[in-house]
Each structure stands twice: as C-alpha cells, then as structure tokens.
Image 1 (cartoon, rainbow, N blue to C red):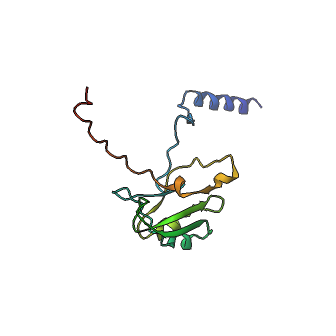
Image 2: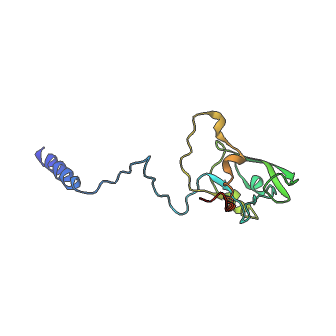
Image 3: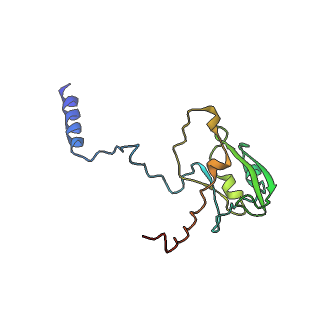
Amino acid sequence: MIGPLVKGFVLTFRHMFKKPVTVNYPYQKVPVFPKYRGKQVLMRDENGLEKCVACGLCSVACPADAIYLEAAENDGTVMAGPRYASVYQIHKTRCIFCGMCEEACPVSAIFMGKDYELAVYSKDDFVWDKTDLLVAPPAESQPPLPSSARG
C-alpha cells in the first residue's frame, strides 16, 4: 500500500519542475496543423475583384449539400468580374469540412481557412453569407495631400 503512494509522489515531484503544456487560450492561439481545414474563405484576385465566377462546381461537389449560390451578371456595381455570385451561402450545420469545394473550384476562389473558433450564440449565425466569407478588399492607397494641407 505504501509502494504505490510513494510512486505517485515521485511521479508528481518529477512533473512539478517541467514546463507546463497549457496555453493561455484567449490571448495565445494554438497552432494548427498545415492540412487543417477550417472555415471557408472566398478569395480576391490581385486587383481586388472577387475570384468566384459562379460556376456552381463547389455546390455540386459538396457531399453534404451545404453550399448555395446564385449567379448574376455584373453591371459594374460590384467589385467582381463579368459574372459573379450574387448570393453565396454555406450552411455551417451541414458542412463536414471535407475540402471538396476547394478541390472543385477551377479559379481557386474558395479556400479552407485556418479559423477554428466557429461557435455562435444564435441559430441565425449558422449560415455564412458572402459578407462573412469574402476576404476584405486591399486598402486603397491614400492620395497625397495638397501642398497647402501639409504642415
């Protein structure tokens, strides 16, 4: 009976001086593996235009039927090419994060991101819209100030 108790104390004493393996979560993020597939991201090209051409291959390739999109012709009001997805939705409760949408996209418009914080408080937030998925456009360069405005 004393032998196992001494073994337990020795084991505890041995681990007492090792570096802890915990992470201070909200302030430090756990690194993800390179092949980790998280929340999907819709990409833009080098000019800031949406890459998605609304071909629908991602929704066809999705085994869980989680992607819904509607195609539209661009009239110049959207930062996209001549054809774009006016509605692009991914249903989070259906998505199995398999990556088939990424593989099916001919223009590499959708990528599986590295975001793993996917919890929501409302059932309405289970549907990711285009505004949630689309990468922000590159910041426009500020025009130079006139010489009279410079200090």
